[in-house]
Length: 131
Image 1 (tube, helix red, strand yellow):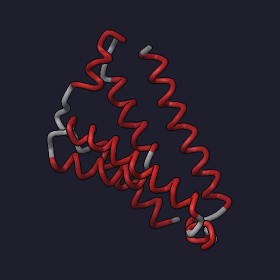
Image 2 (cartoon, helix red, strand yellow):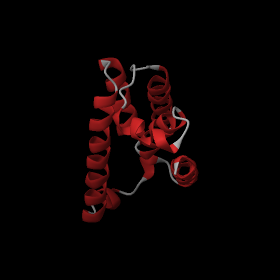
Image 3 (cartoon, helix red, strand yellow):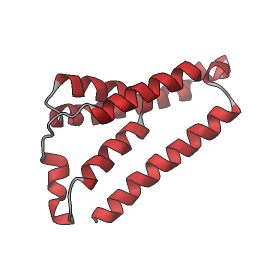
């Protein structure tokens, strides 16, 4: 089960990098047609996605006791979405050795490291600056 979960979230990460790279090479964010932003299904999908991001972040906020780590993870999740979320889960899944430890992924609190979320926030800022 552990390798299955690691594979699933690696596929999520790789596919999101691929599809966002492909989309970025075809159309810059600044050139998305206005009618797309005002379409009801676009708005509904965006609201749905961001409530999912908030839901995931609530769990991250519980796991990360340092306010700085929480803040950086919030920014990373809101700007990178499933890219940040899949990396968070991959970090958690590679921190355990066996499937019998899967409960630790959900229940273990972390020390609140700032390196990974800091890198993601810096990366997302660079992406948005050059997009």
